[in-house]
Length: 399
Image (tube, rainbow, N blue to C red; front, side, top):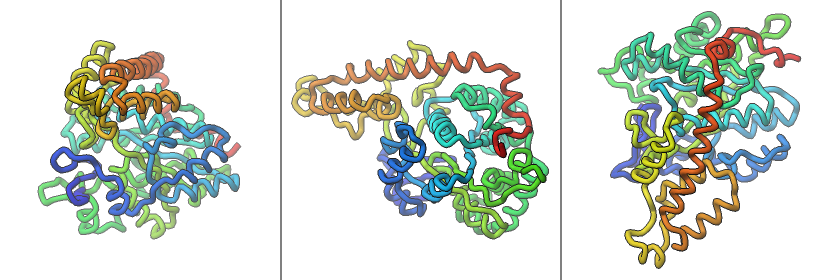
């Protein structure tokens, strides 16, 4: 896809801003045609769920949506919906940017008590990353362990890999979608070129159809083996995935299905700055869940871009530029304590706190997060992966 918004490129495979600049999310909202997530919606989520909004909601990490208010309307009426998110397994271990949508999806599952399907697009990574089929399937299972370690409820969660699950009703829906999207349309949305092989051009329906409940008859069929095609789907994802679901929302009414709703996040920035998102291909741009304390200290201290001044004297006089400071950005993601975060911002922005002090606090926060995840992942067995990926009813659904 080649969604060129002035001087930036944002698509499922590339996120860059010209000359190292920041992604302009206001322009993305305007270009993509989604809506900004308002404080009123965040407050409504708190009221309906009876729990505080997730840090990613209240600090604007998830900042845009498509028809999320309609999901809240039906929830308020006592109706059901389901969640759908996914992961393209291209690396052995996840970095913190990969964890963000799963941490937030876990919150949504717990808050709304709804079913969840998680797609592992191992086929996609064969086509885009030129991975061997067996290697891509292996990485999918390894990534599934990290996803399970986030704490999802097995009675409400189905994880599937495309290589293992595609067929039946899922494939029927893929064909229905494919019949509605012309070659010119898919080129216009995704920017495919004559050099791209046909596997890439044919892939978008694969990511589209988990939005439709009939793709999962083992989950969403009632006692009479009928699927309610009016069941709505909510997709938490980063905004670079929006093109897939703009296509899906255009097609859905034409094949008798509801449009999926989306709640979309900004990008977790690379350590070197906010010109894009973390890259699994550059290990020094990211903190991985497998990083040791030494690794985390080294990466934060050496590579995390600082908004502090070039000397202590100037820093005391002018303070830090919080808009470009990566340690502050990371703390905004992972330091849950609002008063502490505001205190750090005030002290650092005024020059009373130094860069080294802020980085030291970030290292503590990241170490706690990574250690907690590492311990949870160590408890995930192959048998647990098999259980989450087993094609089975989710018994709570129609109870």
